[in-house]
Image 1 (cartoon, rainbow, N blue to C red):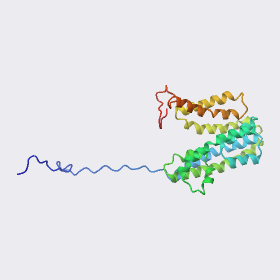
Image 2: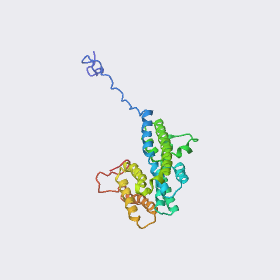
Image 3: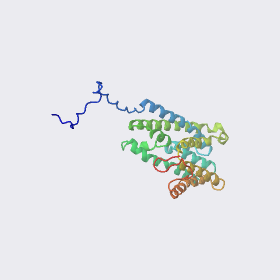
Image 4: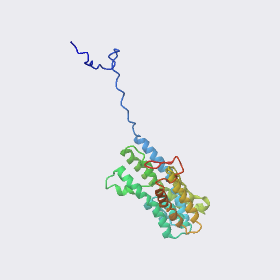
Length: 271
C-alpha cells in the first residue's frame, strides 16, 4: 500500500495543462562595435576640421617674427597646436623667449599623460612606438579612447594622427607664405584661432564641479596677473589652479562644492 505521506514526483511545467514547457528566453545580444569605415570617417572629420587651423598658426608665427623655416620646423617637430600657439603668442607680445618656451613646454606635458593611457590601449609593437608617440595629441586621444575594440582604437588613432599631421603642416606652410599678403596679422584676429580650438576641445571635458571650478580659478589667475607680469608668465601661474583645487578638495573630504546636492564624491562622481 502506497504511503500517503510520500511526496508526489515533480511534473514538468505545463504538464498539468497539457502545454509544452515554455522555451528559455533568448540570450542577450551584444551590440557590435562601429565598422572600420565609420571609424575612418569620424577620424578624418576630426583631422581635417582641426588641421585647417594650422593656417592660423602659420600666419601668427610669421607675424610674430619667426622665419618660414622656424615656423615649419615647429609644426613638423613639435606638433602640438596649443603649445605652438602659446609660444608664438608670447613672442608676439614681447615675452622672453625662455619664458615663452617654458609655457609651451608645460602645455605639452599633458601629452605624456595621454601616452600612458594610450600605450595600454593600443599595445603597439616596440618598433612603432617612437613614431606613434609623435601623434599623441588632444585630437588623436579624443578619437581613440571611446573606441570599444583595440582594432577600432588603432584605426582611429592612426587615421586621426596622420591626417591631422599632414594637413596641419600643409596649412602651416600656406599660412606662413601668405602672411605677407595679409599685412598686419593682428588685425585679422587669427591669433585667437588657436585658443578657440583648444577651448572647444576642453569645454566638453569639464563635467564635474571640481573640474569647472579648477578652470574658473585658472581664468581668474590668468586675467588677474596678465597686466602685471611679463608675457607668458600668467599662463604658468594659471597652472597653479590645479594643485590649489587638489588641496581644497582634500581638506573638504573630496568635495569641491559641498553645498551642491547634486555633487557626489567617489569614483565616477560628477555634478
